[in-house]
Length: 220
Image (cartoon, one colour):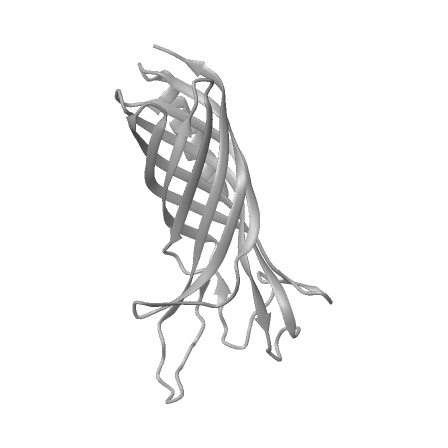
């Protein structure tokens, strides 16, 4: 999956470069504010507190029309949450859940007025590492198998939407929200007090404050 995202980004950037339209390459970085949401039969519930992280990487932009642009990005992005644990299979106390992803947002941006943009599109992710950091030790979730027999899902799919403002010097400021649809953990046998199996998904939710700057452009 990691090599697949690198290949897709390189392929799309090459196609954009050869297209008969304006094309730009640049860098993006900023802060993440993430949490995991437990989804059960349409009902949502938070299982922890927000964790602050960061993202950075390369971006490309192609102009599709007078007010329409396509952004292809390849970002290292940290997610997770802060959670209180009281389980005999993990250390007790507060743990910081650290999910480190390689993500690829593919976003359409519509600029109804000069500088102001509205962004929306899919966000693909490959989980590079998954750990819980306690005061006493750090647990690697790829090696840890809990009593329910669950496992960590390396693939993540979500939808990203946001607002941005681009200045004349190609500096851009933005705010984004990513709603994850893939479950971070799969195969866990959750049951209610009567023994009935529950279909529970643990999904990512991420707010981002982001800054980008275009380093190179090709105008046609």
